Image (cartoon, rainbow, N blue to C red; front, side, top):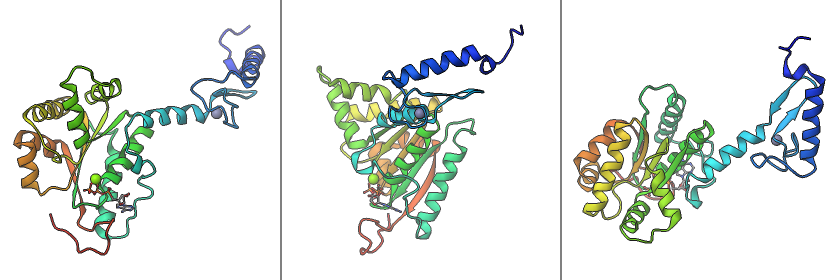
Length: 258
Ligand SMILES: Nc1ncnc2c1ncn2[C@@H]1O[C@H](COP(=O)(O)OP(=O)(O)OP(=O)(O)O)[C@@H](O)[C@H]1O
Ligand SMILES: [Mg+2]
Ligand SMILES: [Zn+2]
């Protein structure tokens, strides 16, 4: 008997797996798979006469869980690169640049970053969320943080009884593959918050960890708000994508130059 037969060639193994699958169908699905998946009935694996395959629903579930932990704000939950309208030049170019960033993400030696820069309502947050969804789909862990929320969380972390959810979120700032800081420069940065922001960005910069930043402040103002050492790192580690001056929320208003 050939001891090196393929697993899938062995009828006993196949019977065994089919048995497990039928048991699983009776109400003990894999916790990671989709109970309602018509392809595997929640088992997570598909047994055919020739093979055992991992069902697509296992991967989808993992992506969904990772996306759930990304902290994407409710309003942007269903925004992605697909539904970003590229109907004027500035939007077309910005979308193309974000897509190229995603394509090259896993190829680059240094973890690239993005600096989405433009007037209010020009789609910076939408594009940042779109990028997060694409990167989560490629297996990366991501965390979205609005700067004003981050300031609030950091302030609370000064106290004693920090909410567990906030603590977990703050811990992930340093760990995730991709961190989005939305609206950098917004909110009042106390000495303590500035110090924390510096150390966070410096650590990500030094460790080649990806940073995605958005801002609608004129450059000089942004630099003043976050101080030059932070500004220099952000600009240095991120590819700048200009989102233009046409406010999607208010198409009737005249474009606003930064
Ligand atoms: N090109 C676009 N296609 C589809 N929706 C868009 C586009 N640009 C912006 N939007 C939508 O318009 C709204 C405002 O966009 P978004 O919040 O991304 O702008 P922003 O540049 O982040 O603005 P702010 O500087 O005020 O934070 C969002 O609901 C977003 O989904
Ligand atoms: Mg925004
Ligand atoms: Zn399945």
